[in-house]
Length: 321
Ligand code: FAD
Image (cartoon, rainbow, N blue to C red):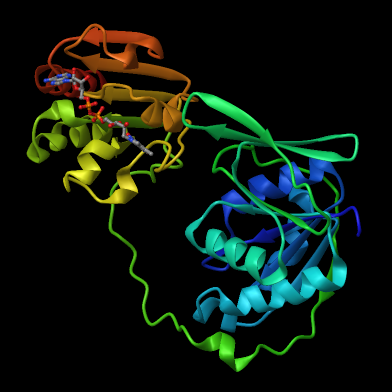
């Protein structure tokens, strides 16, 4: 088994996804980082990955990976892992990479650790940090031989710069099995949204059940818009059908780290805190002075969110005018 750390780079519109670059930087800090890029744009993307830590890049520039769901990538990676036996394969947690990781685990009989927020070597042993149940953290490792697969949490690592690094590029000669082309992507639709994506926003205004009813979420959206931020939500109001799952922040939703997080009508359950407590400044608005959200807040406002949110929005607009 080699001591290299592989990272599968996800492509978004022909560009490496930021989440994959975060993982590549972490891999390069741990040891010799090698990237795998599959898709029509692989050859153009490969040389740019040196700046993010890759010492070598394996490419297969074939649009099949872009047009069919996960199976072609699983076939290719499964064979590559058997041939090269890297020490680790790291992947960012996205819908597609999660699917690929799970299939590789079963196909190649490998160990998979999910939801990692940090990785380190203690001598020969890999130690992976995994948040557990909101309040606890466990250290996990891969106990058996074979490439260890790790899915890392979004925003767990910063994108690192490695000036002057030029990666060796190896072009794979593989033919993709027609059986892997069973599920074709027929269409993809971008969900129209204003403002920054939740994951990238430096300001997030989130609402919870304390807003009372779905229509009141517009108060959260108005403040988010005035602050050029993004609106987010608790699971309670996503489960209630007020908003789609893409808004959910927390243990089973998105992990965010904005500069400012405003929580309105949110109790502060540990599962919600798990996704936002890394925010730099937290402002909480809640009617109940004993609400747990105040334990992580830098500024706590005890009061009615339905009254305070519009006042805040007006004040922000007034100061900007
Ligand atoms: P509530 O807990 O009902 O809190 C509403 C708050 O609003 C209260 O504190 C109340 O005092 C306040 N309030 C009421 N009226 C007003 C008003 N007019 N103005 C101001 N404040 C007011 N939750 C998540 O958010 N994300 C997750 O990813 C997630 N994953 C989970 C995973 C598991 C396995 C489990 C078991 C639970 C998970 N949950 C998650 C659910 C979590 O436990 C809570 O139930 C949820 O976060 C509560 O949402 P909430 O704060 O909106 O509602």
